[in-house]
Image (tube, rainbow, N blue to C red; front, top):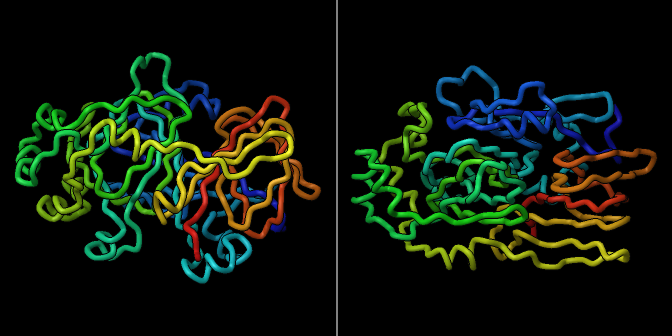
Length: 361
């Protein structure tokens, strides 16, 4: 199998979750009868195993890479030549791990209220090198949803003791008084640091970018008739342990708009007027980076790092040596660090979300 100077493609990699969704993902994948189910996520370029209590015997989460007519486990592919795929400096620092996890997330209901640990908490208390700082890029909203929203941070923070009481009693109405809805629209990007309590509203398709872990404190137990087993609530610890995960600071709606909603920053302007913008940079987090390239006609693109690309809008043709790859909306690919440049051509414009690893310098 020849893998050099080729982009890596990915098929479906649906993962079981405790909430329902996935109908839009079914439509994207041309299923004959699209339905919402407990497979609302598609993990992209993943070497991370999903944590689903009760399904430990089922291997979920790790992606299959496609190169021409060949397919193999993505982690196995990276292990063939990690310096080529990931870059020498990245490999020497992190080993054969991309250190970033990307997902399609398609919600039919509001997700459980939850929070994720910071990397520091994970290192100190969970024997893990990764917490779970997240970013959302909103792709589309279901037609029947008039007011799409997310919850981010406590707008009216409880004390630790009050939050414990709310969780023990599962007083969700009282819990909701700690939050205000944050309205969202397609094309927006949000950053959710570790510790920030949050929930994604119903009817949203997004790209979710995060540290490569599946740590979650789910402090709302029942959604749409499904009740989380105890081992799925507190990272297999107890409530008192997990109460230290939360950021109890006040986060006004205005603060979310200025601090967590990310304004695109221009990085590059190409000859034809195409642009590359930064959405999540090293000033926001040192865990990963997210950019958006908008191509009007044709560009030659050169990057020093590997990245995972998702076609957010439009379609394009990518040329690389003798290879010609046609990509449509919501297709995804991996561009190895060892590729010097690619040519992207489009008839009607294309937007590509690019997910990069942590900086190594």
